[in-house]
View 1 (tube, rainbow, N blue to C red):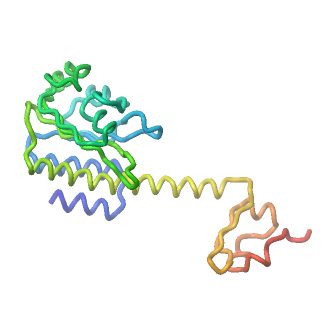
View 2: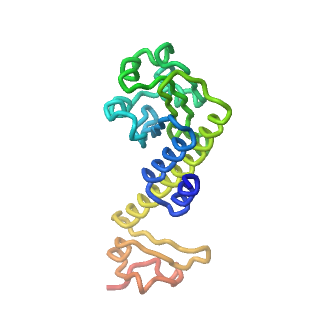
View 3: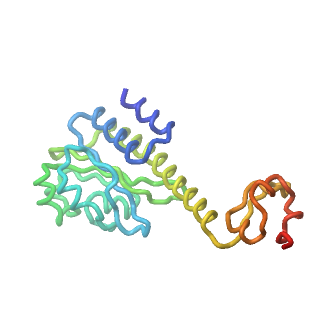
Length: 222
């Protein structure tokens, strides 16, 4: 089923957009008539960028909210991200948060928006998960549970994606820097070196792996 598919994608480490797509599809299957959207916080923590949205939400609407400011009273999602609290807007056309977006929402045929901030480790804002309804409506207890479940899955997917990016960045810095670097285990045995280490010391990788740090702290005699 859809729930199993989402969990399978998480376990397999699928790309973030694929996992978010399955989360959105799962919620929309569980709650007939709903439309879901995930926005991701930018690196500066000032705006929300498009993550993944329901195929039934018009492209022009998604393009308009892509890059929306995080701020109090800036729609449901901008406010949820700013306050780090759930924001329930039962009627978009009559709510003050949507003053600047009423026409856009009406054109997209969106009547209600329930937005939950996606909060990760150390209270870090990761984005928002929103459930839209075609008509003004208030969520039920079941709807709240679905929203919370979607956010929990999104936290796992987004944080793993961020962790993978950090690992790749660290690996690239290690490989590309002009400084000779080595990695050792707790006993002082060399387990890796970067290309600059070979250029600086004259020792190749296969010569130093497994060797003691003490024996290779100087350049090879010329």
